[in-house]
Amino acid sequence: MYFDTHAHYDDAAFEADRDALLSALPEFGVGLVIDPGCDVESSRAAVALAERFSHVYAAVGLHPENCQGCGRAELEVIRKLAAHPKTVAIGEIGLDYHWDTNPPKAFQQELFRLQLELAGELDLPVIVHDRDAHGDSLAIVEEYPEVRGVFHCYSGSAEMAQILLERGWYLGFDGPITYKNARKAREVAEVTPPERILLETDSPYLSPVPNRGRRNDSRNLPYIAAMLGTWKNVDPDKLARIAMENGKRLFGIEV
View 1 (cartoon, rainbow, N blue to C red):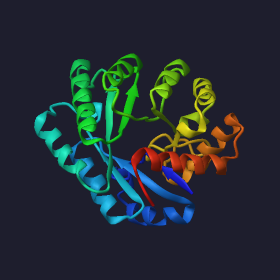
View 2 (tube, rainbow, N blue to C red; view 1 turned 60 degrees about the horizontal axis):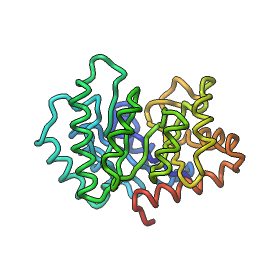
View 3 (cartoon, helix red, strand yellow; view 1 turned 135 degrees about the vertical axis):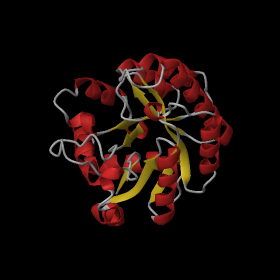
View 4 (cartoon, one colour; view 1 turned 45 degrees about the horizontal axis):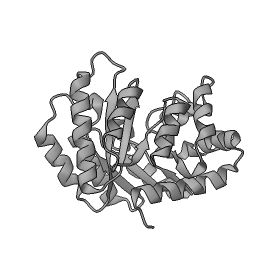
């Protein structure tokens, strides 16, 4: 069985078939899913899906691309949603310096710190988004040594990965590891022990080869596991089982 630790099933891309797809996932070997929120609305939607589907869990948070104008009021809503019994993490939070239209870096950093503080206070793991902000992302999480979690769709260097691994973090591997330009991802995989690997899709985005360009969903996890298994010389089914246990351990899920 697979555990997709990062899939945005609240996204409008699933409007036409969301319920049918989520209901069918266990038939395709996907036993657990985490839907991470990106703002107040999507965090509420993630919790609502977790209430309706036994194999779906929620994370709640304010994504760096979606945090413009957010403040204490929004953080208080996130705090309340985090109290739900099926909320297992604060996320998706972090830094994104890729787009010039994103909120100012200083503001992103402030909100990132506030959400890391919240995670520490609530004793919840975090799901970190780090795009083109590797140095600042690492420096900020190091300010909160009591907080652990996963760097989602990890895109940093192998050297940074080793630092995170030494500090107890997990790394998420997604569809891009199947792309032709995935040399750096392979270097990261080589230094990452199976016990720190999480399998993710980031659905509806980042579909792996051979489905690149199409809407992604959790049924594509075997392609990611197969590539990692090749790189790590581990049977993909065994890797999926290890990743399942990793996710359950990190997010405190007992099923």
